[in-house]
Length: 415
Image (cartoon, rainbow, N blue to C red; front, side, top):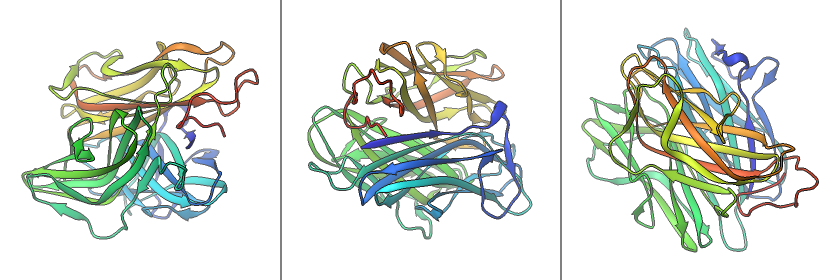
């Protein structure tokens, strides 16, 4: 597998706006949000995880987002990324787009539009591109699945049932970490609460289940599940859902399954999940470590990492929760984002952090600590329930010539 990490963010933490009901590139002038990806084999699956803080200024009006590869829409063709609420909910969202590509250099672009009469806003946008050949000597180590677009699916069952179209199969080596990410346009009716879980070979992954959505606003949500120390072989992951009261609905939806070695003491793909139980809370207006959301390992010079944070945030009616990323106590530039805002958008939320050129010219880092920190913006108590963190690391795209040509296995890749 080869990883291509891209990041784009607005300057000076400013919002970008659109009032257009026609597709336009997401950009912070003069740059547009785009990344080039080198695909080395035909029939390569690609998954694009797009995250950003987003809001719409008018209740019930929708912001749509899509991903283009070489000018053509991926799967799904577009999604409702955010919907206007009262009060406004300026918070992080995430969605996974998928496609199948042949070998060569490909350009990925992100575009957006908004319903007539409304203004949509984005800031601190980031994307991660994962790719893998669909045919390997041992089997598939990544599987990206997007059911065909069409009418929403729904359930009113209080017991677990399979989510239509959301299953996949991957191959692991002994000791691999397996992660399973879901994204979906989601909503509930009549005060219902939608729960989601991921089963691997019939056994729940971690977290064992999450409150995925409790809101009548139909917009994007995402969550990542995982397991460490997998046995070698083929494994099938099935996503399931249940609802408490009311009805749960999913529109366009997608999943990506990916395997990789933690390769102790280096970081390759590491998964961390907090034990299920009471939510943790803070009233601190200064950033403090989020319990359990840290990982340690060795990194080469000029390293690059991506951290995918997802979980169940909770804030009061006027509350705001911010998160950021640190590496060995140093704040990663432009990593501060608003994960949750007001109680009008309940459910899981996710964000992709990216850090490049770690320890440039200083040699490798023997025991780097990657930590997610959080704070309450105004001192009101904010909460985090079930939560997970994935750390994916690789050498920099332009490595030091003194470095060995390869570092780590599987999810490490040098473009």
